[in-house]
Amino acid sequence: MLQKQEQTRPAREGRKVERIHTEDSRATIDETRLGGETQAITVQPRNAGLPAYEVLPKNGARSSPGNAPEGAGGQGPRVWKFLDF
Image 1 (cartoon, rainbow, N blue to C red):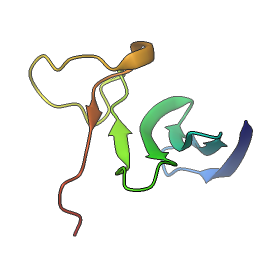
Image 2 (cartoon, rainbow, N blue to C red):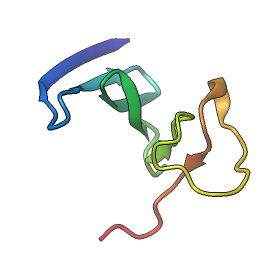
Image 3 (tube, rainbow, N blue to C red):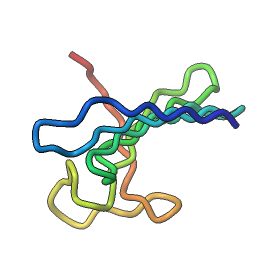
Image 4 (cartoon, helix red, strand yellow):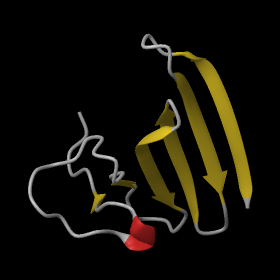
């Protein structure tokens, strides 16, 4: 498993932005954290033809109303983009 962590300049609010890139034989995972709190997780399966999807963090970032089912590992639900503009 390959994992890279890139720390970028502090955000306007004074919180640090981190971008973590992890690869293994099955998927590539990109995670964005703001002030140590996960804001976005994007998973790109290595299997040709499978679309990328996003795992919504349980911390409420970008959450939708209602009771959505939880994904694996205690994270929030998985969502797929159907149209990308």
